[in-house]
Amino acid sequence: MAPHHDPQIHGHLVAAVANGLILETFPDPVRDPIWGELFKVRPEIKKGEVELLELPGWGIELDEKVMGKRAVKI
Image (cartoon, rainbow, N blue to C red; front, top):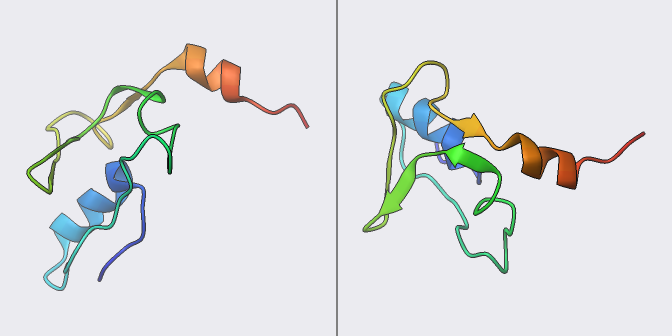
């Protein structure tokens, strides 16, 4: 299994299965400007590896101010 993007979710999936191969992500603010600002708490990428956090749920906390700024009313 080699999921594309969203390491804050897919990192848990790769870690949980025997056939987890690689986790693709784009922490570059030019390619993915939201990754750098959307989370108050998120896994860190260090030396090419995602360090998952031992927190409840997915181990992330979203920044509500950013969510409001980026929201689209439909």
